[in-house]
Length: 494
RNA sequence: UCCUCCUUAGCUCAGUUGGUUAGAGCAUCUGACUGUUAAUCAGAGGGUCCCCCGUUCAAGUCGGGGAGGGGGAGCCA
Image 1 (cartoon, rainbow, N blue to C red):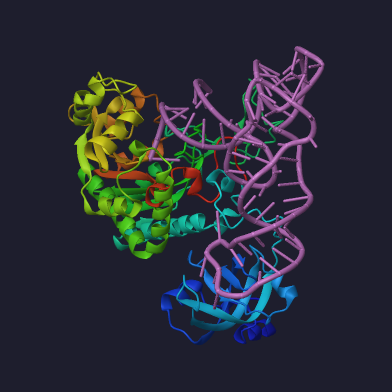
Image 2 (image 1 turned 180 degrees about the horizontal axis):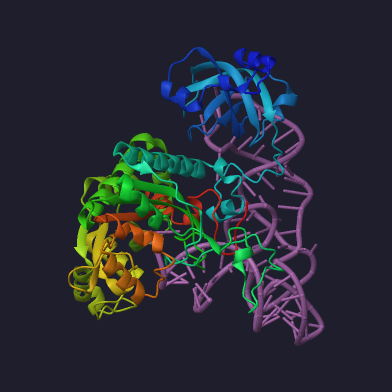
């Protein structure tokens, strides 16, 4: 569309950019003695002769050799760290050690200059904190290039898993009027002039005059809408951005994050757990198979980072080892009540090493307890089920004991809760009873209650925080490093 | 939001008991060298010591307040 005839001609004749060969292919291929065109960015330029060129397809750089005396000094001067080049030449067996092939350059064209005095990235290690401040440039480092390629593969695997199983990808709204889900503080969405919003006679804001005619927010979860679709399409999932206005300042919370929420009709809690476990194993396996190089790079990076830590804080397994362990072993499943028993009888509790000692049934587990179960006691992912109803959401199905609900949380080593899910309460009277107890308006959620009025069936679902999954797979300890442009309290740069 | 630590050159950091002109490595620039692998060697340039107020003859250093960042906790995914 809109391409002029001369432009198409230029493409066909190799003047434009889409006839380049990716460096990943050249290196994987290993064959030699043929002409190619590559395009990429300079990582280092050594000895006025050797260019380490990276095009984003892999962390492996192509060694481009500019033979001495063959290139104009004015061109060589512009081959600086960060500069973009188009190089045509011949792939030959490398004369030096460190790489099998290299590109003997015939023609070097500077596509874009990069002022070395001002370019912030240097051919050396940078701290993650510094790179966070220049998040617009951090894609150009090996670590972040690997992270975002892995993030892509994980996202692709999410869709592939559900698609192969016949799930429907459902787009739930980003802007919602519902504020009764109770999943967290919400961001308000308004078109009002904030210095002069429409007001009622009593001085309160008159949202009837606002864009949507009512108060609206950014979504905290697509679950309720997911349930609506599941009551017709049976198996659906959402995968989209979610927003929480909580003032959470931790390495595992974002104000804007991506969540995957499958919702399945004719599922009970056990079906739900089976699906969640299979799902996590599948996407990790898929990524191990398709991004082995990047995971090896990240594994090595993590190993070097671990060396800086004192012995007792180091993890027992390397990154890839850990991922392989997860896909080859069953997750440990136990009830909240059993977990409390284990924690209560643990030496840790008896010796009062917990900051919060376990005494009574019914209290929520603190992260130190979750970490103990996952990292010390079972040493593998754990699925905790049947929590006390008082610490869980209104829509979870009430168990026969009258005290617990059919909830399940999956806890992963190093990051804690990665999945939260439940069998949903499909019995109308039980659900409204619970909503009344928890002061949740049945009027506002009348549309939701229709699913319990017209052909309700047992159904279940879960939510998985995508960035936490990316953290787990890449071994990155701060969630701000696994999303391109993190949004956190007091920070929304770029 | 709470606890705790940090903020000195482009980056990573040192800076003694408060005392003259604030240092190092890397990066950058200039030159040398030329099959290098974060090349090497020599030289040069580069500072709002986070901000404000205070104590003092004198503050990078001490005190108070603020901002930003790290780690931990809560809330959660």
